[in-house]
Image (cartoon, rainbow, N blue to C red; front, top):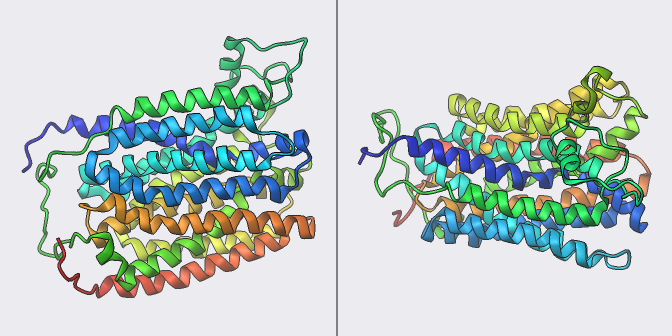
Length: 447
């Protein structure tokens, strides 16, 4: 079945990117670190546990979310994700106190992570079904919005999270101007509590709007002119999650994802304070950039290349296959972390932010498209949900280990070295994935 209006594919892309941009603000968690530590006297390990729990909840929730969206479609499930994410910030504003770090863990961590999990899988699953001819590229484009979320969020959030000044309240128009980078503000924000309320409302509204544009193609639909089973390739077997989990290929994909994501999350969870220590007050942006210079600081550069890396590595993997792309990407990332040990100059920090973001972003294009390649699109939602639990494990190990190492050593040297070693392990695991993928075992009772 090939007859279907192709413009539907483009509306799904728009909705997918809008949803993912909002969900991707989780990667700018580091902007909360110092405001919360200053407000409540918390340690670095205390704040990092909120990030860890959000990522773990995100990954675990993707399993039921993927299964549900395979059954009822992406629109309703993504809408539920937007409601949960918005509620997490609204409840956080009411409940979080100095003696209640657990309230941040429950609201931002568990509830917010669940909202991201319900929203995240839907755009990817829908686009894989609409674009079976460009899985790597389209998956990269879908998750690029997730990587870019921190770019749009970090600069405005850094300004608005500043303590409110009783004598100089910010109006709605000024908040909007600060948000888009036109105004630098007055040096005072609206405080973390008001910011949580504002951000919760924006999250819910934007995700629900994007979800309204998501839909699955008609059963049996294929792109016009696309050869479903070219002579050079065997037909893709569509595996249930039980069949998939019984294969060594799925196990190795999962393990490789843990190594690669843990290394990146150790750094990303603390990127803002870590790079601030290296820069010692110096800035990337020249004065002529004005307020827009906020977007050229380390976390902004990381976010830009995080987004670009998803498209870049997705396209590369379409050309050279997924495991080869993984191996090259992890080797490059491991070398970057080892070189960061001696980073001192502004130029080095700029390049490091770009390089780490580019390679970390590739994880989310490569593992999603590999899951669709090896186990088929029919049950992609729940299948990728299980593979993505590796990210949940990494979400606990990475930020928590990074926070503990910082508190124990007072610096970032050990975190860089550990992250580099994990990347080299991920590259070695990619070689094993490559071997299994070249000689896939038959799936008994495949559907």
